[in-house]
Image (cartoon, rainbow over all chains, first blue to last red; front, side, top):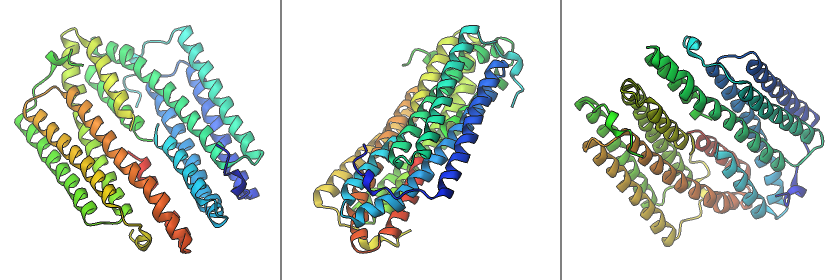
Length: 99
Length: 99
Length: 99
Length: 99
């Protein structure tokens, strides 16, 4: 699945820091759910929290997707590897559209 | 959202440990994605990993949902609070059905 | 999959008419998409329309789900067949949560 | 939402016929559900059928998406309108990823 990797446009320092910040918040949320389980918290409250984490993760994934499409796939196309890169994009979108 | 909490059937020690094990694995996966970002890994590889975490979280949520329905909602019903408990269940399912 | 059918609470005439109205509108939308294809309409416009139909269908399904839970499952429970009915409900929710 | 329409690669006769065949089958399935409602069929059976229609519609949408990406977006890019076309693609994917 890494055959279009050469077209990757490196992330800026700001992009990296923003991603890390969001992922650390998600990590904290997952630990929060562990605490809820340890504290015998009500199932519904835990499920609501898990839905929130799922949404946050999905947003990070979508942000990566949009950036990848507008940067890396665009670069691949300008380098003549557009078809391969677009196929790879569709594969990952297919995976994303599933739960 | 905690109005049916009294009908909660406490989790067994085994259920608690199983949930914690799965949540710790998910926490590890989230940290793994942070590492991928720090190591400038290819966007598509990161997205595939995020999809996997989403699926794992969704499974935990669904496991909680099934257990809640068969234990707590069932208990609420036998105690005469079925209607409220079922409404609560539908609300959380609605949230779950969304991304 | 029809083993809890005996607990079904019949739909009122109003419920039937409302469902039929919504399903006829959906049928009309599907025919509209056929016309778009015949008229060589732009892919993106067709996809947007398909998304709208999917959302409409999903709403009908969810409306059925909520009514089934609050009526039929509740009745099954009061008749002592709650466990079976709740299992059936979870199975259909699992199917629904998928695309 | 039709600003990239000029890059559309016309569908072949075979593609049109295949799409129409699938959409007519979906139209038939929607009528089948109307019949199920008229016949007072069990909620769960109707919901299962609605899930099947949703999946079939989703497949048609995804087929359109893949073809649009590999044909029209690719063409837009080769004509220097790649950025706009890719943005449009992301917008429709976002809509698709929702229920």
